[in-house]
Amino acid sequence: MRVGVLGSSDVGQALGRGFAGRGHDVKLGSRTPKSEALTTWLKEVKGKASTGTFEEAARHGETIVIATRGFAFDEVARLAGPKNFVGKVVIDVQNALEFSGGPNPGLFVGLNDSLAERVQRALPGAKVVKAFNTVPNTQMVDPKFVGGAPEMLIAGNDAAAKKQVVGILKEFGWPGAIDVGGIEGARWIEALVPLWALVGSATNRWDHAFKVVHG
Image 1: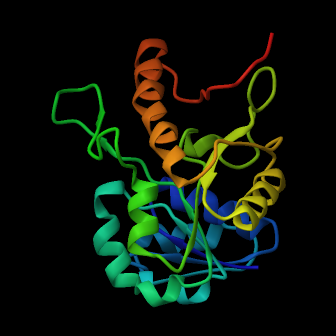
Image 2 (image 1 turned 180 degrees about the vertical axis):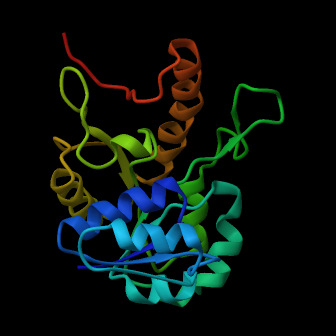
Image 3 (image 1 turned 120 degrees about the horizontal axis):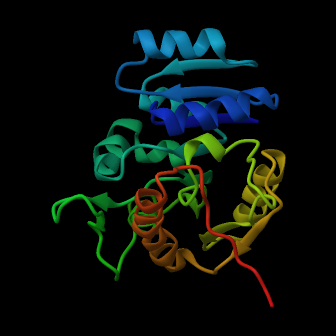
């Protein structure tokens, strides 16, 4: 599969590394595709990988991962070209964190919207699935948790796209997913992340995830 990853921060690099290491053809999109950091990433990654502009990565991908900082999405989508997303599965990994109220994060989208819904509205021809945003980038691929990895929370409007994302999750070492429904369910998946940050601050650890357990 050809995968375009939009965003070259730790999250984009981790997911790009995961896809490439499993035999997929990855292009990592960035404003600075020839930077020293990405040159180093290319040397270290195992598998078929390249870097390019956001537009080149979006054109390249049969599946596209949006791993940019949430507040940058509108500009990234414009640079990538909305036509390059039509008909494709788009995995939205972004978070809507903002820190205007101090060190504890809030959500700049409020509780009546989500980044995933904004992505779906901006890219109506895409099949958007929210996933990966509730776990740290260090655990996104080959997760290692005491007691085992939890099921990933996902949301989206297209059943076939969600099935494909579940396949990717299993390929990356996750047991599967809990599908919370349509894309509007992403509001509450994204709302977990400020709590995730508070737990990290309280425990002084950043390798945790939330798990659904049954009695």
